[in-house]
Amino acid sequence: MSVTVRVPAKVNVQLAVGAARADGFHDLANVFLAVGLHDEVTVTPADELRVTCEGPDADQVPLDRTNLAARAAGALAERRGIEPAVHIHIAKDIPVAGGMAGGSADGAGALLACNTLWQAGASRAELLAICAELGSDVPFSLVGGAALGTGRGERLTTLEVGGTFHWVFAMAERGLSTPAVFREFDRLAEGLDIPEPVASQELLGALAKGDPDALAAAVSNDLQPAALSLFPELADTLAAGRTAGALAALVSGSGPTTAFLVRDAESAVKVAEALGSSGTCRKVRTASAPAPGATVLSA
Ligand code: C5P
Image 1 (tube, helix red, strand yellow):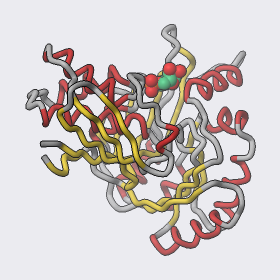
Image 2 (spheres, protein in one colour):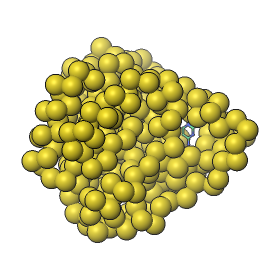
Image 3 (cartoon, helix red, strand yellow):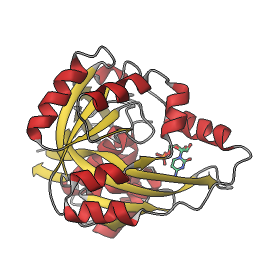
């Protein structure tokens, strides 16, 4: 008796960041796009809460109560007054500490899996509320597709996507911590007048039309200067992808994964090969978007 949930990674096609709030978070206009790289989270009844992980970067995943999947199971169990007596196994394919919401994906996946296993009956709204408590990006991992996140990124409005977008992702030699990147954003922003973050109408129109050229012209990431400041070598990866023919090259979220929008699947293979032999990254993956949100595969 076990439940497996498949959950996608994300790329931020726009990440507009406002000034630091009193609570330390930043108001965002965060346009999420779910991409076809997935983790699979399997939950099985057990004597006590336990997390295991397999996959190429599994050794970098914390297996204690700080793991978002463990926290998700704990949060749902607490609401139902039961013990989170479950073994959570994560088959990890999303890069760890990469700016692609891998940890958030595992949180959303474990939550949906436990809700199914325990027949806990949480509605979509309750699941989304628990996701928002777990982290700013977790609600989007549940929902998938494309969405505009406002507030700290957790308040979602679903967006229309009119076609398939092809992407190449380059994984970096080391990770970057999201809080550290936001702190660097604050340091670089000192003394500057930071405007309210707003979604770009050009970008939303490009998504709705499924037009890769228009999307390439509109993508932006306000965290990119901070990520490059902490990890200057990423500029070489971005340049290598542009030279190879990517329509757009940007840091994914807080990084350090870099994302390359390309015209079609054929171009994705070409850009991936060029990046792979450029010596500027650890690993390269291709994926298309949008991908569906957390989905129960087997129960
Ligand atoms: O919400 P989450 O736990 O994923 O956020 C991780 C960290 O990223 C926060 O502790 C904060 O430093 C930073 N953050 C932020 N503003 C946001 C989202 C995240 O400053 N809107």
